[in-house]
Amino acid sequence: MPVSYMEVSIKLFGINSLKEKRSIVKRLISDMRNKFNISIIENDMQDSKEYLNIAISFVSIDKKAAFRTMESVENYLEQFYSVEEVFREVYD
Image 1 (cartoon, rainbow, N blue to C red):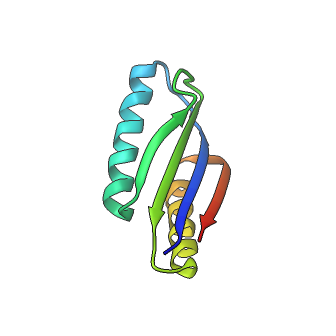
Image 2 (cartoon, rainbow, N blue to C red; image 1 turned 30 degrees about the horizontal axis):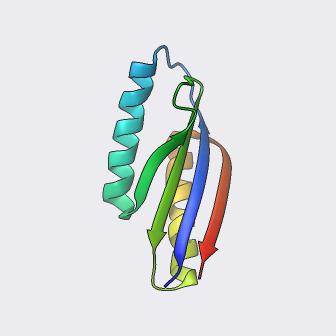
Image 3 (cartoon, one colour; image 1 turned 30 degrees about the vertical axis):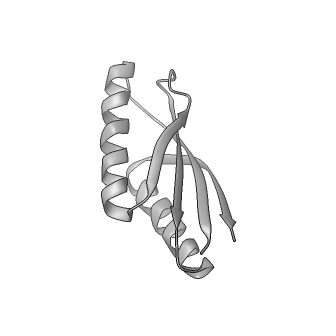
């Protein structure tokens, strides 16, 4: 059963306070957990109003399913946010 790990950097626009960013992060994490059944955290740039960096991990049945889930996660994020960088890794 492969374990997958992703890091995603997102550029935020129009954020005036860290409180506003926290509400966005909280909603994003909740939505992603419910939609994809993944573990997700904000792992870097917590004090930045311009950037959001999240780490995602999950276990899947095979590598094909892992890559499909990673693609779905990336496509979902790109619909709503300006994704700047994505790091993907699958461990067997």
